[in-house]
Image 1 (cartoon, each protein chain N blue to C red):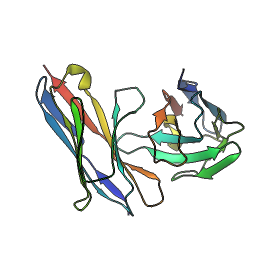
Image 2: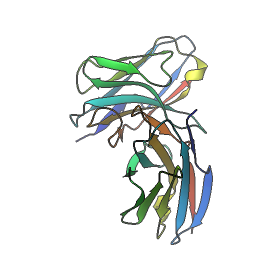
Image 3: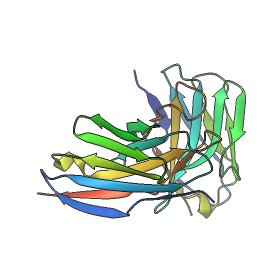
Image 4: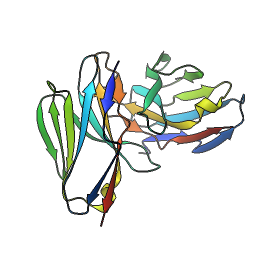
Length: 114
Length: 109
């Protein structure tokens, strides 16, 4: 089992560029989510999904779109990157819907927007 | 507003015991999690408390007092590999996780 995988591991973008962060899990989990982690702050939920085709906004959704085409994969898209989106992005999944269960995190994507 | 407070940084000696505190003020409570995060890596699950009291798991124990809005993580027989950040997170009334900023634990030989 690979667990939760994310690509890319590192990315540098110029302001206004777009990109998609990919996430996949092989644990047959229903719930998947995207977080950002900034220095001195707790993890903040961007978007989450309770199943294929079902997504919802978290605490900081502005500037991000997500797509859950199937149970395994959950992608995060930045349409027009801004320096404020410089952060470390984690994808997570759990067996139970919602966050009542242990979250399994991917290795993270370190994004810098210049 | 919702708030989770943890000390920013703590230092302890190899072989000793350290207690990392977490206080919370949230809209509702459906459980409290502790995660460990080594530098440059992903968080990994340590413990979950929903009832008052102490949960022991090997060298790590977690305590919860819901009436005081307080939890602590106790690490015994510290090893160098325990150097990491420890994240406290509370599940609120909407079953959303509210995360603390984490406590960076430095272990000295």
